[in-house]
Image (cartoon, rainbow, N blue to C red; front, side):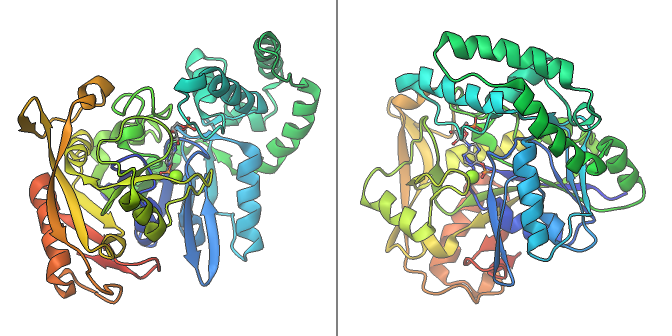
Length: 422
Ligand code: IMO
Ligand code: MG
């Protein structure tokens, strides 16, 4: 029986998971989103057409690949329908889309609550994407959420009325705008009708596919250090974007998991607040941001940028059982004359590989850097790792050596083909 391959983010998101997913999904029968919602975002360029995917697995663009939105995903129906229309308007079909009946639905009160909570956090804000992600997962766990199956079968009105009433009480208390339940019902009933034919029990769909030898790819969204359990709490997202979320977000058992690809960039970046040891709040960080076009796909915010942190990467590797690394933007880092690589943290005079998501622990840790030669030149035409310049090889070899996991993919440029498969 085929095993399920998984693509995960190793840091704080935006590692370029889309590029690896795009490649692997062309070799898969099914591509699945497992966690998160439209806080995620990756863009793909095919035949000169640009697609920004937030919810639909990008496998939808491959004829014959089934694109599944799993039960662990939270869905803003309005955004999903817009995305479906965009795919169709560009000459592709969405007939191959399947949505889990257990996925939870994001309503306007989740988005308003996200905004209000960020406002109330004042100086301690998380820097969320304000897409309603935290509040919809709260409702899920509080057991007042509305799931896709009930939504498209119009069995959600009673719960919706209760939810809007209780949320409005909170909004009123803080002088925030309240919502009109009749308006929501009218608008969302139309969305329910549009989405109904795509909603199925994806657990059986995936199991049957596995039994019949189909190849499944799980597309991770967000990343390990944004994980609600293992990330830098509270500056995290409200789901488990690490390996556990792949199982709970799909209903696929752990024994079916095969390769786990950890995606990273040859440097690092972060959006939103929270500790970030190798951040370069200086002209180097600015330079990386410009060279790597580090501005959010979802919120357009400029990303914080810095050097690659192997202490954090090792943590992600161990947590997820990563079997192969996918390193993007090797071309980008190679444009700098000199590159630094964090290979340990120094604390109280001692160097270790001990990562922590505790801000107090990190506060007096100092990154220990090794310096590498940059100026790789144009590497976009390299088809094998061997063809890379020695300077690039030295950098990649060191990453592999410290982390103890082989490099399987090397991103050498922006184009779809600019990737070395090792
Ligand atoms: P992809 O899939 C980068 C960050 C937000 C914020 C925190 C919580 O593109 O890698 P949320 O709206 O999820 O409650 O925000 O998580 N965040 C991301 N940062 N890429 C993402 O997804 C992200 N999804 C959430 O910036 O700091
Ligand atoms: Mg992103």
